[in-house]
Length: 247
Image 1 (cartoon, rainbow, N blue to C red):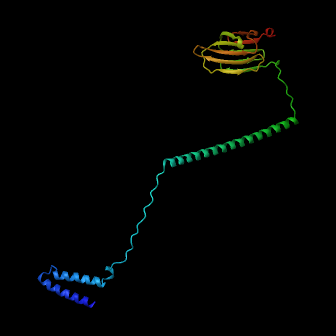
Image 2 (tube, one colour; image 1 turned 180 degrees about the horizontal axis):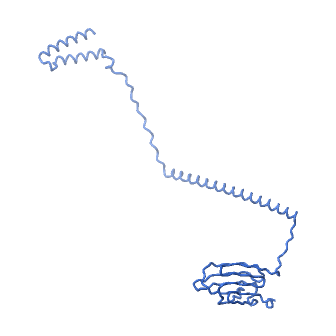
Image 3 (cartoon, rainbow, N blue to C red; image 1 turned 30 degrees about the vertical axis):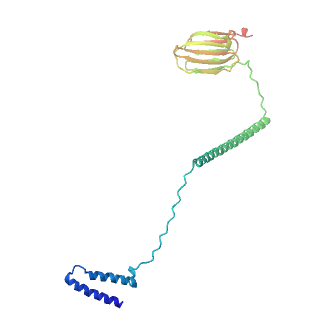
């Protein structure tokens, strides 16, 4: 380091001498000397550690990320088919499950019904009942309140229609054993049908003809209409079987 100190001292002297001429401008001698000293110092390796080059790790190349490969049309179709097949299989499995549940429920109901029937048969054997056939010769007395303005009463041999309206027309449909009665009256109602528990009168129906200001009653007879007699007055119609003609 001694030669370096001597050089520095000389440099300071030179600078002082040069500064006398121009204290603000570095001389050529100063610049040449500084360049020579830096070259020598570099060769000797006496720079402070903070100015010396350090080992720098080499930068390694990072491999490029693989780019996603686009699926072909065939692959997309295969995936769509697989999804469709999976959905169909799931639906089929659900249907089978529902069918099994329905079959199990039906089997349970049938078993319960069988048990009830067996119990009923057992009770019937323990307490036998005698079935009596219905006698048609017994008079049946029935009444049906059809509407506020009309009702009927009947037995096996006669049928009475009670109404606040009057009959203005009567005729038969012999091929169908029908007796038809038209009543004068402007009313509104839906057609009604009744099955009669009578030996000689099967059905009674009533329908509305509001625009023509009348309603119609139809009686289906057991025998030909000629075997019945029909009479009516202001508020009543009476239909009876003519026993002589019925024989």
